Image (cartoon, rainbow, N blue to C red):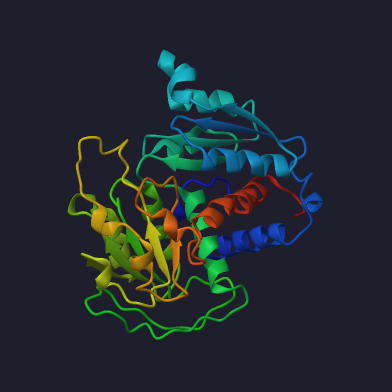
Length: 330
C-alpha cells in the first residue's frame, strides 16, 4: 500500500490487517508504539475545516513519535491564494515531509496529489466523494460493537423489497459480513456514507437501508456499485420501514456547505430516544460528527449511542494507517 486515498482501492485482507494493528495499539502499552515514527515529519494540508480528523491525525502522529508540520486553513493561508496548483504544492511539500495528509473540496484532489507525490498521500476527505479514514474508523467501530472473537451468523431474510440478495455465511472475528445498516440524512453530499458503502462491498450478506430526503439520495454511481457487488438495498420513507434487529443506524447531518440553496425538512429523520427504542438492544447509533440537531441529546446516555467512541476510534485506526505506510517492525 503506497497511498490511502479511496476505500475502493483497498482489499479485504489489507482492511483486516489495519483492524489487527488498531486492536494491537489499543491493547498495548503506549510506549510500545511511541517511537515507531521517530524522525518522520508528517504534513497536514487542510483546505476545508476539520476538528476530529485533523486533531486525531495529529494525535496519531505524536503518539507514534513523529512530528507535524501543518497548514490549517490552506485555502486562505497557503500559496493557493497566489493561484498555485494543487500539483505544484504537493511536489514542493513532498520534499519537506515523509507523508502528506490532505483534505480538499475537489473530488479528485487526493488522486491528483498521489499522481505527483514522492511520498504517501492520505486522503482526509475529498469533496463529496471519499473519506477513507473515516470509513476505516467507522468499520472498526462496528467490528468492536459486534464483539472481537465472536462469530456472527444470521438469517438474512428480513424486511421485504430489498434489491439484491443476501447470503448468510460464517465469519471470522474481524468480520463485517451479514451486516444490516441504515444510512440516514444527506447521502448525496455526505462523503462518509459513500465511502463506507464502498468498504462494505468487500463483504458478503450486506443489507443497506437508505433513509434520506428525495433531493439527497445516493448518487447513481453508488447505486451502480451496490448493484455490481450484489449488495441488497432498499430506499425507505420512515424508521418504521426498517427491520427491528438492524445492526447500525448511521445518522448524518445535512451538508449545508455543499448544498447552500437546498431547503429540506429533516424532522422525520431525527433520532430520538423514542425512535431508538423501536429497535434492538444490539442496534448501535453512529454519526461521523459534528451533529446539528439530527440526534437528540437524550440519546447520548443510551449504551447504543457510540458516536463519541466512534470519534475516538480515529486515533488507533489512523495510527494503523501511518504505520502501514511509514512504519517498520511493528
